[in-house]
Image 1 (cartoon, one colour):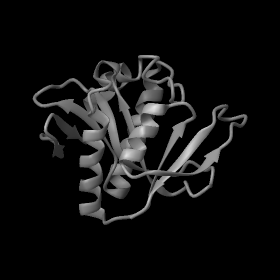
Image 2 (cartoon, rainbow, N blue to C red):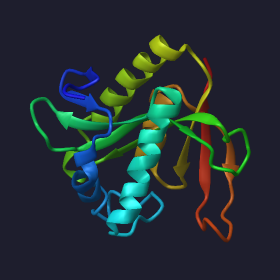
Image 3 (cartoon, rainbow, N blue to C red):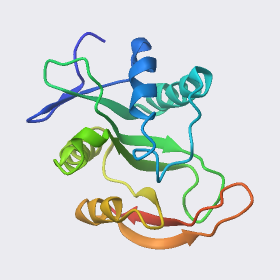
Image 4 (cartoon, helix red, strand yellow):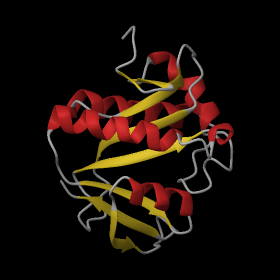
Length: 176
């Protein structure tokens, strides 16, 4: 791919590329950025597995997370979009279209996730039609809860902490 798949007023949205590993690792290296995410060790193999999952969503389902770059820049400042997930914990979350957003701390408070997610949702619905979507937000992540509400997601359940995942996750859905 030699051009972004989508553009917004400020950003280019790219499908994952082979050269994104270093930028992806840099995005997730900041402990504040990953505060509400499952920890990702600074291991290139783990990051590559994550990028492969993103690419697989694109390959299998025709949609996935975007690498977000400011116009004309190679700097990846966010990973946002819709991807196909199968988390394996039920509660209406398995085999679903899932929304997700991760933004570099230098870009917090500037509306990056909202701008990109609005473009992603519009693109997805135009290409794939309206359908139920889900997202999960760790308890206490108020900024993501506000964004989810602004994007039309409403809370519908909760995943309690367990041995595999010791945090509470609030589950949200967006109906067509």
